[in-house]
Image (spheres, rainbow, N blue to C red):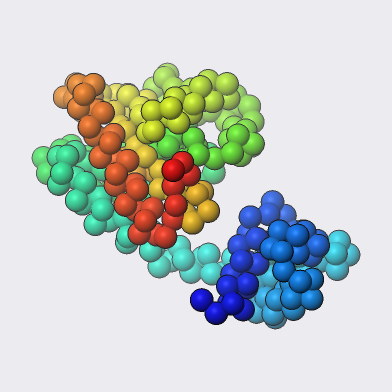
Length: 254
């Protein structure tokens, strides 16, 4: 890659990782570039609308055009397009229905569903939102977020939506669930979304290791024993790893 282009991308990535606008000196320290170079690159990004300068605060942040690019990304649906053939192969292999969901606040939004032949319809239709803490796909994503992010999403008891009287209803309980997800290497739920059905899921990650989606397999709970659930979970983990590779990502845990 051309050095100048690499420096611009690294600067954009550094801005995107910040919780808010930062002084140029912080970017200089993080990127280990000459101060004059960082100011020059910031000027170019500002002219392109990809960065903004807050003169009163002497800080720099992402510009409006960065948001527009993100909107364009969502409109083109590349994540769903890349995931669809992976899910189709997964369904063919395991004989159960599968879906892809992304975190949307405290909910997951279902963006792809692949139903196995002969299997009943599920509530996880494309466009449906469900409480993230109850779903396997949501738990897979939440488990790989920073604890502070999870706490911000679930600050009090009112944040925990109930569907069938089961599932975590407090932050401490949710944290225990997420610890188990990280220990097992995959997430699961049984009857917490739909009575009689269970799911296992794993997260796909972007180039920073951030979880961008949960990939899940759903099945009638009575039809699959513990060994079968473990096999389905490993298939979901493998499919999520394939999606991570296809989007140029890297797993959070090697």
